[in-house]
Length: 137
Image (cartoon, rainbow, N blue to C red; front, top):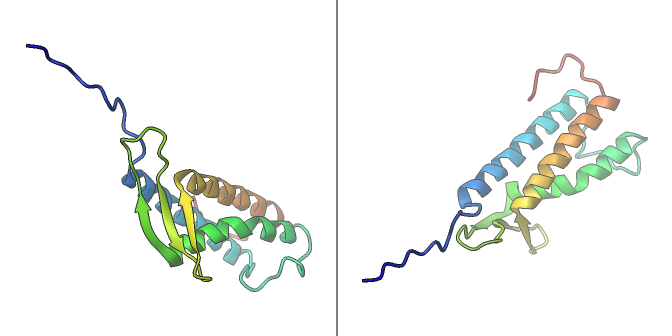
């Protein structure tokens, strides 16, 4: 009798749970930034970068892509995909856009977005120091 052991998958890749956690972290960091913008009296929805002066102009331009990722997740999340058994597979979500398009956002995209949002929080604090802002992580 011959016994064969298959070590087909030595370690699972990222799962849907990992993807879900990164979606949550992205929305959380966005919420912190948005709260700090509110505290700084920056109405990012109604301020055009072209009309703003530096450094707010640069801040608003740098906010565009992370805002687009957040909006896609918050308003158009359609499906989530993962295959932890396939080496190198990166989990992703698909989101519907307002223009009837579909956007794919990967686990790596979510992590980059979190990093961008955290950087924007730091930039905001440099040019719009908090006025007794409630502590946000």
